[in-house]
Amino acid sequence: MASKASHSRKGGNKGAEPVIRSLPPLVSIIMGSKSDWETMRSASEILTEFGVPHETRIISAHRTPELMAEFASGAEGRGIEVIIAGAGGAAHLPGMTAAHSTLPVLGVPVESKALKGLDSLLSIVQMPAGVPVATLAIGTAGAKNAALLAIAILGGKRARLREKLKAFREQQKRKVLEEPLP
Image (cartoon, rainbow, N blue to C red; front, side, top):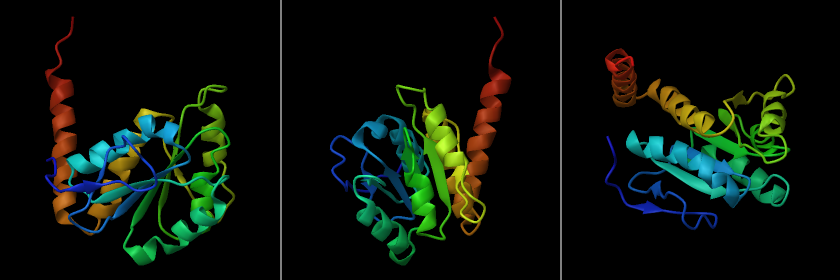
């Protein structure tokens, strides 16, 4: 399932999992700071495993608000179909991205030191009516599920991805059924 495509990085993500470059990206993974990469890397890894072209960027709603607005409003025009936005603390990135785009935005609360990600979760999930953000679990589980949800969204128009997702789920089922009890 892994892609053999060449990769590149954007936004100063030194050490970050690169993005598939063979095709224009369909998914953007954005995060508020480099420290969020440890969580968001899981989303990139799953998209790579499924062969979904994507990009990763650091874009802060607070420190680079103009860049964030420009990125969000221009994403659709660049061929992006889903945005996965991870943020910790006040976690305004997913909501502000959704405010500037009509693309699906999948919010991943990154675990914070002070409140263990509960602050991030509440910041992302409490969007006002009219500006939806699909909010996933706190941390790595949320990043993985965001990637799988993005694949499901893209799979609505792409039979190949739908089949890969079905095979993935079947593999998970087999794993559970084959797990021996102590």
